[in-house]
Amino acid sequence: MSSNRRIVVTAVRTMELREDPIPAPAPGEVRVRSTLIGVCGSDTHAFHGRHPFIPIPYMPGHEATGVVEELGEGVTSVAVGDRIVVEPTLPCWECKPCRSGAENLCENLQFFGCGYPEGGMADQFVIRADRLHVIPDDISDLNAALIEPLSTPVHAARIAGSLQGRAVAVLGAGTIGLLMLAVARWYGASKVVVTDPLPAKRAAAMRLGADAAVDAMAADVTAQVRAALGESADVVFDCVAVRSTTLAAIGMALKGGTVVIVGVPAADFELPIRIMQDQQIRVQGSATYVPQDFASAIEMIQSGAVRAEDFITGQFPLQQAEQAFEASMSGDHIKVLIHP
Image (cartoon, rainbow, N blue to C red; front, top):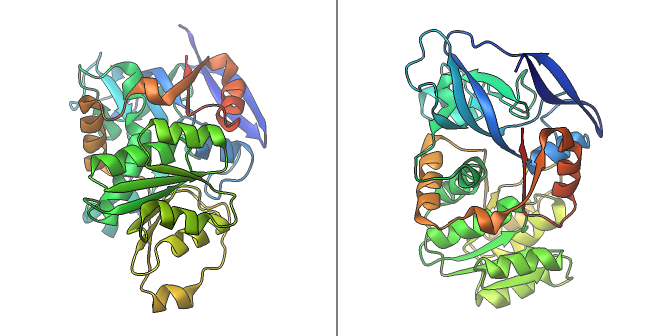
């Protein structure tokens, strides 16, 4: 291969397949041959100009798995031929959050595939070697494609506190919401109720172990969730993060519950701060992940708690990336992958 194909989002709702020279790794970097790249909600939101932190133009592809092809100078943590999954956060390692082990909150954070000069939606890409996790031999490529997206709800659950024996609501049954359901079950939630406006998504939630699935558009969605749980929610994971879902989440968590904002809000909105204070509601943001979340995600996949056949519903070649984005946004799929 003498050239490298990559997807570039050049304008709102416009992408192109470019051919560039094969990239060479700088010191501390590796060159990776892509095997599978997930299409994330962040990708589709950015494609439509609705992501608050991803400017256009950009090179998508942060959910990247592949095989190490070339090592830059000084790299010893991986070897040529290793199958890897990318942890796309690119911390500085020098600021206060980085020094305290919270590199996902780096004050100078860059993000591979999200406004960074490189993305994984390409035949090959280069990335810092310290952002790679070697895929265990007992995890297939398809299952490995779920490690990065699964790490997001793993992180959200970890910072929410113990879920053992607790009543949990998950708002949104897209990829992250359904993975959040699996994580809540993994960590011992007593009941999990999921909401979504689409019947097919609610049906998927029931197949994957929800105790109930409620229409998110119902006027009494909060009451329905509380009734299905048999009590208030101890923890609500808002995987949508629009005004209606966050307000509903606060109502489900009354009194003394926790609302974790997992979805990326497209815009700011007001919250009922008086109720939150008076009824002691904790609202917790959840930002991406750290290495221990990847380790837990790998453990879940190795155990069979999360399986590719339950989540991956569409695959497209690189030259059909736009069709892959359309499929991901259609509501007909759970997880869509692109394979170069």
